[in-house]
Length: 487
Ligand code: ADP
Ligand code: GLC
Image 1: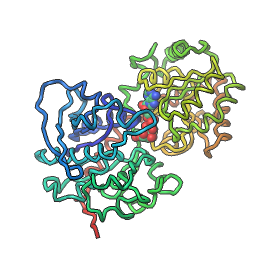
Image 2: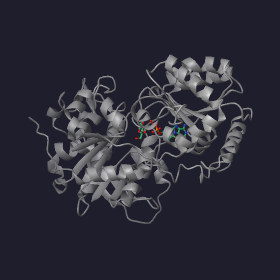
Image 3: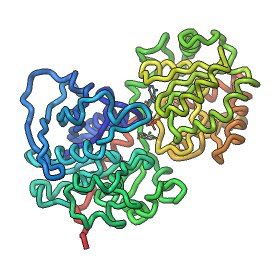
Image 4: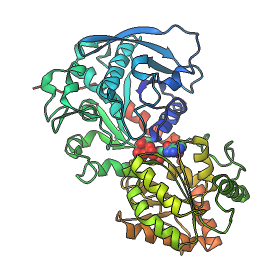
């Protein structure tokens, strides 16, 4: 089975969130399960820096509007699975992946339309072609539409099956109709039953309609997105594809996220000896300028600053919580400037209680996972979520909104039975959230019960093998491609 994955992120080459983590870990897990995987990314500035002078790039041209745009396909040395990047410096040699903080590059529609076209040009030249083309999110969704909607351009790829994984339905790649000519698709595809979405062009919708199979990153989210509440306007489309939609829970790369071997930490630990965790907490408090106090519960957040992640709940409740409760709070995040400002104001009013770091800092993210006592993830919705899974392994008890992958991976602690791994709240709102925080703090005051809870979490196994097996099975069962008919 030969699979090519097109994606816009893969850690450590390019990452803004969990998508990067998935593309770092799923391909090697698939390789271990016997699947031959190649990953294809845009050659961003961070990737260009890693390229060595050896190897001859494959040069090609891809149609964008009425032009043929030049690209080079370069192999990335020392990647965990074969990895190539599509080089076109005018599109990808930039400071960021998608745009400045909280914003987007004005030509993102063109950048990713080009990426998909160029990737197909490269695939045409592979001998033999791959069995499966696995796409991730809106940035690569058009590849499915191009492959079928302009099939005459790709006769070599007629047998290739396509899978689209939706990591987050909230990001759809919607653009004004002006971008349509970039795509070189028949204008009859600009209709509500195709790529049109309330007058705009919707890239993700292209993938949802043209991919042979759709997956998303937890079983619960697969159900949720078929409802108006979570469907982001695409629940109708998803319901029509219900039979071909499945939720496969993400895993954790325990080689990268393991407190017993994590090189980012002040000390290492595991469930049998938690002394190192206390040292990590003290070191984190010192690093962040918080009083070094073992007795105070340290709440922690590592997150994109986005609506999705529950920052409206947090900014509404944190001032009072910090004023009335003996806790400390560490927040690492970057993204939406509105939340940045709101959090800065709260931090200014809570010196010595709230440590705020507005940046993207991979190493600090590991130290916060290790040094915290309670990890807050009050996401309004969460396709899978990886940080709650990292927290479990680091003995940092997750407190989550019961939604999506959070609902699928965290079990409310039952003090009487000693079972469960964290705290969950529903419905989404300040009252239920604060009640869960109070529940957690009460239990934290009982060291024996708390240790039990930590150990329950640390014993969970969310490794990638299981997900890799599910994807491999899905690839194996893909029927011959069906070409949707343009009536
Ligand atoms: P999402 O993909 O929606 O952002 P996930 O929980 O799936 O959420 O994954 C988030 C990933 O991004 C984790 O690896 C997390 O540690 C990382 N991350 C998010 N924000 C930051 C930040 N400011 N600094 C470092 N890592 C971050
Ligand atoms: C998205 C989702 C997150 C998920 C990640 C990886 O960014 O927001 O829930 O864990 O993708 O699939």
